[in-house]
Amino acid sequence: MDSGVTGKLGEYYLTQQYQKNRAAGKSDSVSFAEFAAAKAAGAESVEGMSFKDMWQARFPGAYYHVMDGSKISQGAWDRNDFPFERFFSDNVDESVLGWTPSGAEPSANSPEVQSRWSSTAGRKAVIVPPALEEKMQNDPGLAEKVMANVENFIATYPATPGCSYLIELDENGEISKYRVTSPGTITISSSEFVEARRAREEKHAEYERLAEEAALKRKILAQETDRKYYQNKAVSIAAYKAAGILK
Image (cartoon, rainbow, N blue to C red; front, side):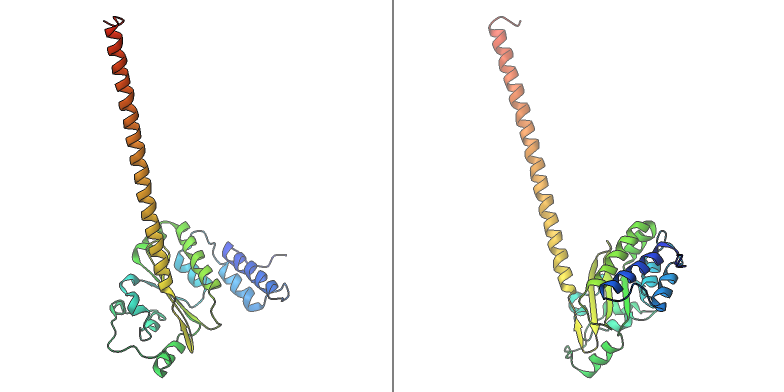
């Protein structure tokens, strides 16, 4: 039967919803809202869609900001008074990238902090550096990979219902920092990403060092082999001449 859902994106979301319902012990049907969302998502094919279009089709009402989030220090990002709620808006003043605290860090239980966290409940926002935005515009395949990475993070993160997600990407499309917030609590584990990225970079640097050492050893071995070959050849020629075989 034709469901009326067209496009790869719509079919994908509808299939995903069927699978989620079955896993939850529900019937194989989907609600009208779920069907409508899938049909709306299917208005366009995944192919050729920008990351922004995929992001906002998958998460209606989500915010998308092209700016260099790496300018925000990890120390500032992790503070309870960092104004992360500003990113849950269509327009963000880039002065937030250089935010610095004006005093002691407030308690997570303070009314002001709790109020700010509650104001973002259920919302999602992503910060995309200009370099990555340009790469994805020129490479739709990269945009799809980044979308899959971000969607998988949100789907698998052990968060409670109603949480907000603020995700910052690096220029390669990897998650650099994030904040997952719910009223009453906040989980900030973006430092884990920083440590993991540092470990990957160190591992890559070690791999490059070992590869260079191996290449140098092969070069030295080849040179030594050539040297011995020509040395032995010279000795043989000298011996032949001494024996009167060569003149």
